[in-house]
Length: 313
Image (cartoon, rainbow, N blue to C red; front, side, top):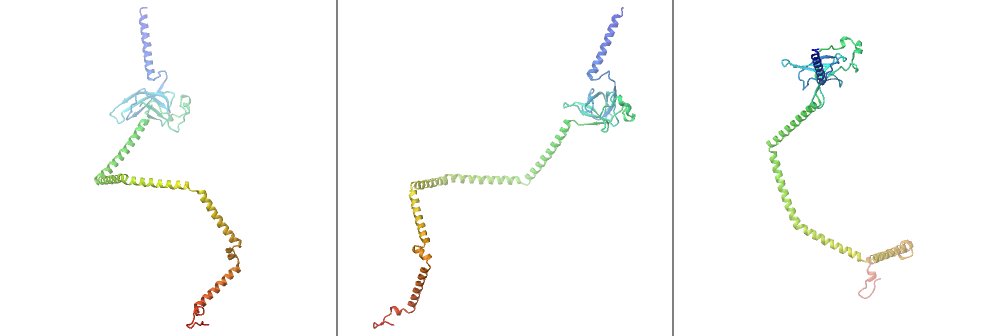
């Protein structure tokens, strides 16, 4: 019975050590009750990968990074040890990719399966359907690759855009230097000075015109408007109704004259529409013309007298 207390203390220490070991591994994300398979990969740059980082297959966490070994004497300095669930079997062609895990800059491992491999998870239940050549043995070094994250992609695009902007700025500076060397800037400034002087002269002329000519023009316009107002006032005061009545009366007289002409009763109507009267007048005119012709040819027959008072026959 004298050892009963020591046994209890030892048993309690053992339980505490087990709980400490289990809790430490639990905090690290390791399930000590789940068997795992280990695989390895070699990287030149870890980009901030740390132990206990997650291992994914198509976005599903299947394990974690156990240890990181480095040997700077080799070109590929870092060896990454990962462990995944034992029920997950990797087909040939699987590679270990270093990826960005979130926007905070954390890194993780993704096991990229070949595209022709079935999408369902391999387990011990269907292991008998596969040949040994189609499964990667545990402890194998997998081929590795690096997948740039979103921030690195944006940084690359930003650097490319900045480079293009810098090239354009260099080109602009070169053109500006060429302009300065060719005295184009001096010529341009001289032209600007000349144009400024011309504008100053035009401004002076405009001011002088505003002081001298514009008041006269405004006075003339006021006089014209006053005269126009007087004319409008006279037109308003005129007896337009009486004038319109007189015009109507004159139009009625013209209409009556036209009516008389068309009625063939008046003198003008008879002259226009009576052919016999027209013929008589025409015959009279012809006779008068013959008489004038004979008078011109033989004037003595009508107005000549002899010295003795005798009239020629």
